[in-house]
Image (cartoon, rainbow, N blue to C red; front, side):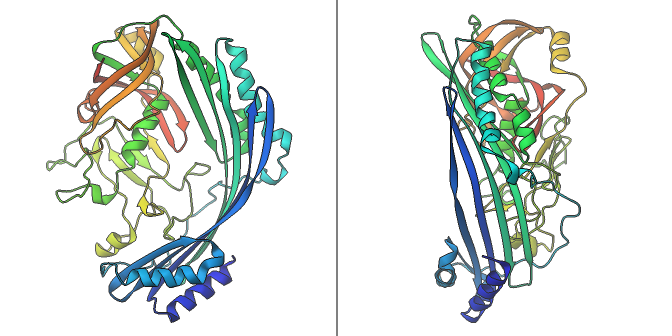
Length: 439
């Protein structure tokens, strides 16, 4: 569906009674490769097309439908019908034309069309093979690779016309080993905008080495424990927290308040070394984009400014109410962070551990954060890790229950380290923390 067709549907919708209208067309195509015992199976992913229709009628009543582009007329009619039962909103409606993102975002890999079957198969096959080379006690499974090209076109009744094409590459795999009379599995998932990055990441080797660390003899962990979160679990944790930085999560009347709330005296709510930015315009980053699902160019924000709650995600309706610019974080029916950058420190994790000399639990990952309550900040999760004394391994800690109140934990930062890694859409350093209880 080209831009002309989208504009035609906007005009037809206005003739049917829509006072305002937005259309977002998305087309994706790609390839997937699965590997089992060294043998690769490649499949073309069937192209997918979706059309999202938003309309506003009298009083700012909104209707929203999504479906196949071939059903465009029915989607528009359905959205208009839905708006009749919607509550009025004097500040709702399409966005006006904005200044576009300046400079290249680097989100489309020009190499994509030149990739062959062998190029793609190399990624999961090499990763799976690396697991066996690291340690024969490990079992590799579910190693796969996927890529996609996505085209997005946006049109609205205020003359905003936008188009963007991006690429995405992914790789994943699972390593399983036997310990303590049962089995433990670790999984990794890597993502990048370029094939060169994805093929150069030795994620099979890294995953296997993490598993080998957990094969050490067990070291008991009970009671209050100092914890080192390397970049991987730090990225998981702050990605989960940032999901709740919509403006509606803050203030006395917040429907679903986040445990991090600005203090009346303006003092930091967490350690001042915690400085978190959100930037949807970073070149080559996973969630960089020239416009969100409402046609808004992303605005870089500082979510935590030296421990203080600062920026928030603001949608078009709230932005119009307060006469400010929307921040460009709308994804579907929610607001979500783009690229997150947590400021790093000056000393490495190894140097910090050596200087501390204390017993520390190094957490391997936080793959399941269902035990995080964003309202209270209570965290209750099961983790695997390695216990060290100074920077010397003592043993492995497997299936340890780790609990803590994040508001307290994030005020007991021992060290923000210099070791930084990009995990998905998050650039995160390692952090050493007190305030957790194990067991």
